[in-house]
Length: 583
Image (cartoon, rainbow, N blue to C red):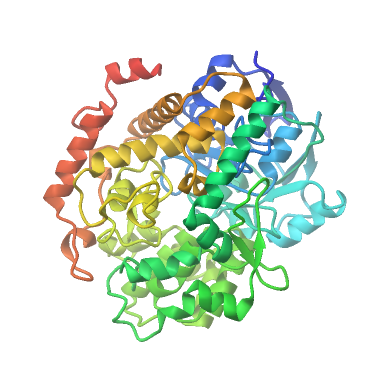
């Protein structure tokens, strides 16, 4: 048993029986899956076929071997479950201090199963783990819940909780950690899974320390990574200076900022997109930096009063994509989503679909806030919108107007102009998501090297490599932004220094490939197949900015991707591939 990096203890809580246990995971489980997303995927897969909102579904909060150390950008933690929105295996990770506190409390992961007969919250402080009544918290939103729970802990403990949306089992509900900094386990309705268990919150505080095998080597590798982060202009002159909103000007210039539910060119609507540029926001709000644990990048932003400001995806989708020219409306809607515990990308995706079906010219400031509240409260039209764009469009008789993959609304990049990123949306295990392969890096930001965004040529290989890479990154668990500057080699080196195990960049890529194939197996078991690895027809039929995706070329690329992955013609991993990966 390796005592470095990993805590070698997993907490298991059955809410149906109020039973609290812990166990020592097998060495091979941690070495082969690292932690975070990989560990969660293995546990979710082994849990079998379940209904997402049944007591049999599990929620796994899992840290990685670097979590709780001072490795640059390692202050993240992963959550895994079956999604009630998509029906796929699902993971989501967030920054803040939840992951480091969990590791310092002495756990690599928490597995939560069952359903409490009444509302509860879980309190963890090192070896002390208690299930407590949350009757006084039920019905409250995130900020009030967090403030009440932290009041008795002198604001030292970290809180992850749901708002009213999660309680009401809204399929777009998220889990919010550190409400002042607002770090979200977003997308996929993970907050509804937590709500289905009558679990309002988890409070965690740790006083331990993660052991490092070779402190001198760790210090050396940490300095090397920090030098690379400083030397990367995307980080030092973009993210660190302006936060993620710096992307708005870039995507606008590339003409990939989606407009009017991905239907129009930016020049068509009657509003000025420069309202959403980072420079304009900086001049108006004078934002302050907010960093996650052990992060030198500090990409989050808050106003002078310490209130959160929206990130790129929210700005793009609640701005141009619903034809709303009012940045202040985006700020308020973002805060409303965070307080209710709602995923802003999915809410905006549903609203874009709603706007098109209702033939609106845009969604006003007042209407944006009213609709968001109705989604959070699961009332009136909000009940239908809260099911997500796919279900809403189908209920309205217009399934073609839902811009989604596998039930998950697309993020704020038009795939017609970043075709590799679009291909990665289609092949993502969790549905329409940019973070699975994060081809934003090479196609938009030209990191680690530039690739042509306007072609599908070569994108089968690029997609596979980046998918495997970030499956491993999500298991360490490290922020993807760090990989604009550093890479697998640097993080393999520091992982080796922390754990005493000899990891190479090739080892990390193999771990990532193993995780990706296991996730694919889960989805195949749930009935997903080749027909689900596709983009909405809009992108194959409707030109925007003179661009469209050739469907025949797309399907040929998909076949090439399957061959490169060692899957059969239907996208099912072969026995030979699984044997090679040790699955």
